[in-house]
View 1 (cartoon, rainbow, N blue to C red):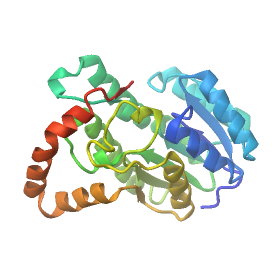
View 2 (view 1 turned 30 degrees about the vertical axis):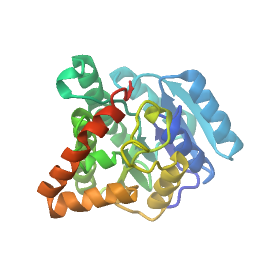
View 3 (view 1 turned 180 degrees about the horizontal axis):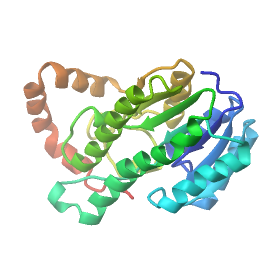
View 4 (view 1 turned 60 degrees about the horizontal axis):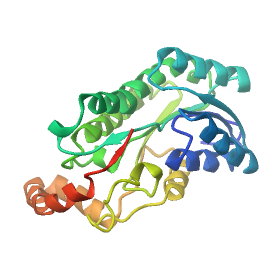
Amino acid sequence: MELSGKTILLTGASRGIGREIALAFAQKGTNLVLAGRSEDALNETRAGVEQAGGEAIVVPGNVTDADWRQSVIDKAVQAFGGLDILVNNAGVVSAGWLENLSEADVEQQLQINLTAPILLTRAALPSLRKSTGAAIVNISSIFGLLGMPFYATYGATKAGIAHFGEAMRRELIDQGIHVMTVYPGATDTPMMETAGLGDKAGFAYDTPQGVAQALVEGLEADELSVVRADENSQGMLDANQQNPRQLDKQIQEMKPTLEEAVANHRSM
């Protein structure tokens, strides 16, 4: 896919992976509609986009709000004449024993990570169909491929968005809309500041720049998926397919360390 001149709606654009995705797209000469909850942070992203050679507008709001979802699409069309690419990146996480999570945290993860991107995609489809080369990019997670203790709800949302993307890819296969799913591993972002998955649990942290660059390159190559797994994660992914009972035992042994590492992991 040629990205130059494309108009891209990016949720979760205020920081972390989202900000780096915006900057990577900007270097390709794209128009960006930057969505997120913090207007100040979005304006910082916009400044970086413009410095990198792209154009951007800022549309702060809550992705769970139906009126806002339609409004952000309308503003994209008004500002740039259409919509070519939707990147569903906004996400939250609350880790821990399921019975210890508040009902509000469970519901918010489901709403922001899964329900909202499905509904935003639904709202965006009429505009995407008018593009001569459209795409939908969903940001899942390695934990969408690998069930891990203390991330039951988060992992369920990320597996759900991955399955949604696969189904939509096949639904839209003859409609001129490409669908790609990205699976980041543990990444050095503000969302991960309260997690200890690095030194404590043995996961190597990726950079948000690396994830963003892989996403852009994957989209240019019309890839179906982009998986960013460190050696430890890839070994677990392989074991989960080949010998899941053995992996269960491995995770059981590391569970006390993992529980301690993620005890305060919450970014809502």
